[in-house]
Amino acid sequence: MDAILEPIGQFWEGFLNNPIVQLASQLIVIYVVLLWLGTAYWAFRDMQARTENPILPYFAAALIIFFTPLLFMFAVVLYLIIRPRETLAEVYERSLAEESLLAEVEKNELCPVCRDRVDADWLVCPNCRTRLHRVCPSCNRLAEPTWPLCAFCGREFERSPRSARIRARTSEPDTDREREEPAAASSTDATAEHGRLRGATPS
Image (cartoon, rainbow, N blue to C red; front, side, top):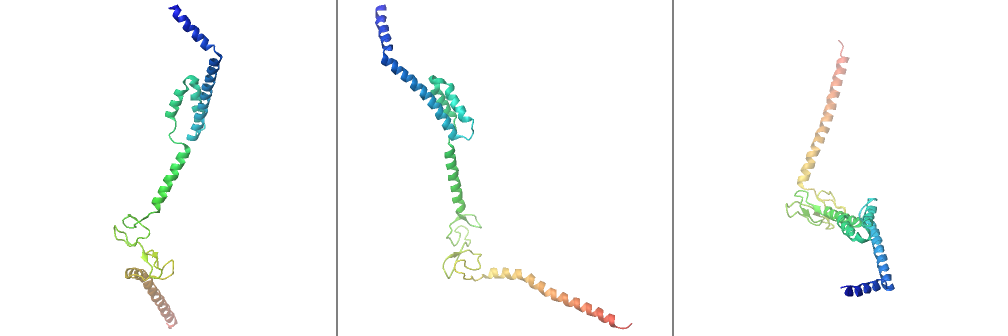
């Protein structure tokens, strides 16, 4: 048995004492240490890109350092599990995309009656048949139904009978008030004149 193990031991002793093997082993150790330190620096920068907390990047680097060069790969797996899923740049891009989508939704017009989505060039809502725009007979451009004249060419629109009745109703109280004011003034003048005549009559 010793005759078999002795040549094997001599072989391994000669292999380990070989300068090339020793140099290769030293290079491997240096590489592992550099990889360990580089991984700690990567965890530090990666956590900086994922959070605004100034302490967490140091904690991530300390986690890699704590596991030593022999076990730091387990620390890398643990860091990949607990780190934030998105970077700050990705969160910013997602917020911009959401704001752009919200602005696009708000840009779409809604029917004032049924609140259904309508296009800007529709004349009538297809859902509730509400009139959305009118066509100017002069310039053939779309105008709002409430505009008294076209904003593009300045042509005045004909008022519908309904709007004329509404305007007449709103103007009737002003007319009645104007009629009441002269009547009240004339009655006041008549009262003053009657008092003056009574004062002038001898007793």
